[in-house]
Image (cartoon, rainbow, N blue to C red; front, side, top):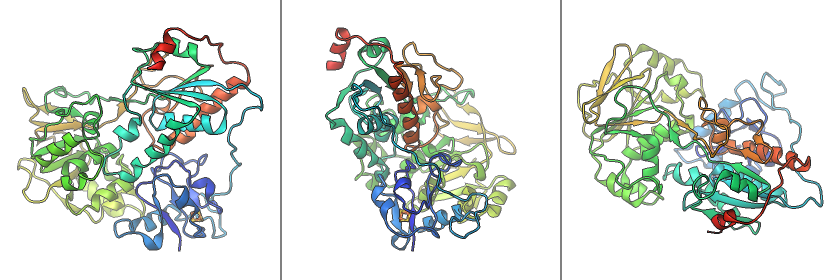
Length: 495
Ligand code: SF4
């Protein structure tokens, strides 16, 4: 009996290096790594040792025999990743997973003077960089965040009911008390201290500032009251200090969510689930109070493409489909939808919708009474918001154009980064240009500001390894700029 990786997989690959038989894939360095949303255990090769379960930072790995009813499909999901590419059947096939070259933690020469490194941002990208610096070098780290609380996206981006995923924050928080780390919260680079001042006080600065600005849809009417960015809604239910407690009004019966990534599914789930279930989570008390009196009966999740190309991950969809307090419905307004679902191969995303009810939804009618529901509508691109002084609906394509009457429209079509100080910024990608994480010797980037807003928490681990590697290369080669001490900078960081 094998082990299986389940819904909360963070894909940071902590489990890969402890597996004695190399049966967890895709591993860092393999082509699929970072694009599958989760990792998978090959049940034919697994020797059932349990080492991966001990190493997993989010408690996502269990023996197949002990999977709960809701997690049982993961036995099949893990196995189906290896369809035609077993590591153990003697026939290597196209995806045979041979051991790759060993990767050793980066080291610096003995006797090398400690580096003083500033890391800006306390989210996963910054914390993986901090972990690397503190665990594998003798560096001293100044960890800075503009907010008065640490945690970044783990604290303010992960849905409150995803308690296992949020656990990784505890792993990161252990480093906040490391003797070689100074934590400085409520310090904003560009306001409380300039980038030049920060650089002058440290041997190197790593920016892990993420990509927190919402992307626009670029359709008429999106600035109308009643149109909200998903970042606002997520910040609202997670108690983000920048988002007012009354930022989200739930007086509408139907909400349309534009976008079908994991954030859209998170928001749809939080808006429809029983508030009593949320009461035991880290949800903001103000948001919980509003959810208790919410009028929302239906959330429509709009995707431009078909179910086979949806941006959400399989585990997120499966989590939603398994809920008993919410009806999940696919709007079958187009023949391509049923066809994609019925013909999908085992393990494909569209195949996960096979058990989900399908109907051609009448958008001229109000949402039905009874249990709340989430409607997945594919092949639908937004054309324009309707309403004069307030959102009344959204006109979408999909065969003929259709107007979906809705009192709230939430835009969940991604994020983009913002410029940092006077560092060069690529407006097209919303990132800071770099080579392997190096902006210039002494200045580095990691996470979404480096590679754009894609990849989950775990993707930052290899990203940070690359960036810290570039920093150490520069240090060893004597390329880091000389720094000066004292003055205004010391005062700003002393707060
Ligand atoms: Fe590898 Fe042991 Fe986990 Fe199986 S139980 S995947 S052999 S670490």
